[in-house]
Length: 240
Image 1 (spheres, rainbow, N blue to C red):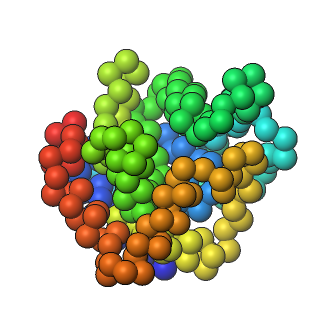
Image 2: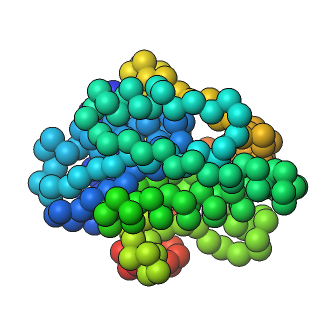
């Protein structure tokens, strides 16, 4: 996928759900994976021509796990002229050693989001951009159904009243495979995920199940995504 196509996906999502307004200061959550780096490049390039002017900040929440290094992200942000902040935490220690969670992803995600929102607030941001792609939307829908027994999915735009922050998901129309293609062709260095549960999560199980089901049902993910868009799930019809 070329940059022009990535920007097309991102601008359509932003316009469809009014994700960006004039004067916004947007914190981009950067894990160092393909999606967050796609998001960083997309929003930086969108700044050049989008009719509504906005600022961006890049933020990484470090879990405090051994082996994590963010030099490549810093170098990319320096090259792009984007201010980069690393928030150092003990989330990894708490989740894996103190709490010893058997399914650590939920707690880790909540703690990381809290740390990201706190950092965004301190930097004067009013919005936080998250790198969920189109596949993530479908997987989250099924995970909610399978593991929580409810029909739910995160919204394109949501509002955290306590922090006075909006969360936006500009990559929601980007298929995961195309995000991988963009990163590969761009020569961007991906930061290895040091998480001890990487590759052994409920999301990975769901991803594999959907891949298997897709062999028998044509365009399964596209159909499910369309159903989510047309549903009455909160946030998917424009209300926040």
